[in-house]
Structure formats: structure tokens, C-alpha cells
Image 1 (spheres, rainbow, N blue to C red):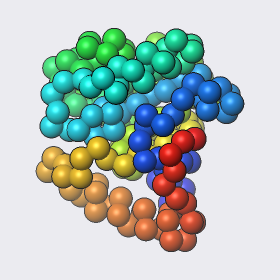
Image 2 (tube, protein in one colour):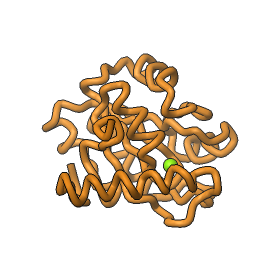
Image 3 (cartoon, rainbow, N blue to C red):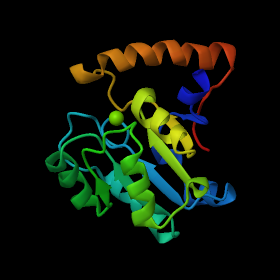
Length: 173
Ligand SMILES: [Mg+2]
């Protein structure tokens, strides 16, 4: 059971992921969560950090798509400023929009990584689709009410990963 919720990697920040790392691992494609993964959940606008990261990846031929459970209005505002394609209201961990994203990008699961700050949606959803999953520290610790239960479950799972499986927070893949 725990395996389904275990990320392949734990990173301090998604911005440590470079095209070079990905290519070494045979990865061409990134699906990424938005809120608290790329940007604080209560921050309205895209940051230069996101734009720079995406521009560098894109220049190296890495495909990127935002897969967010948040509203179209919220995701579009950030995605448009960064030019990153997106699927909003994705209903992660359900599989439908993971599959849609891969189909739109013309990518296969084995060449794709999923990045996110929530075990129960991003990591569980990505694992179910057999993607490499990368768990990142949330940008901002306090979070919306809807995720309180998920955060509780996460603390239990994280304790297992760090104490029993000796997984560590790293800076790059
Ligand atoms: Mg999130």
C-alpha cells in the first residue's frame, strides 16, 4: 500500500530539475502541479523563476505541462504568463487527465515525470500512471482548508519514507 504513495524522489524545489538531469534519465516530459509546487497557493501571478525554468527546459526540448486541480481562471492566469500549456480541474489522482496530458504532448509514461507537493493527489496519481514521481517541499507551509486531511496523511507517509526507507530531501534528480 505504501508503495503507491511513495515518490521516487524528494526534492527541495522543482527548479533544481534541469534538462541535463532529465536527459540522463531518459526523460523528455514533465507534468507538474501548480499550487505550492511552482508558486505559493495564494500567489496570483507567475514568477520569473517559473518563466526562466520553463524557458530553459523548452530550449532543450523538454515538454512541460501544468496539471492542476484548481480552477481554469486560476491556472490560466499563471500559465498564460509563462506560456506553459495546462489542464485545470484535473481531478488528480484520477487517471483521465494524466492520460489526456500525455496524449496531447505525445509522450509515454516511461519518459515522463510528475512533480507535486501533495502525496495523495500528485504522487499517488502519478504512480498509478507509472510515471516517475517527484515530491517537492510545498512553497508555502500554510495551505487551504481542503488539504488538511491530505497533509495529515502525508506526515504519516513522510515519516515512513524518511525514517524507515531513509529517503532524503535532495536538491536535484
Ligand atoms: Mg499543490
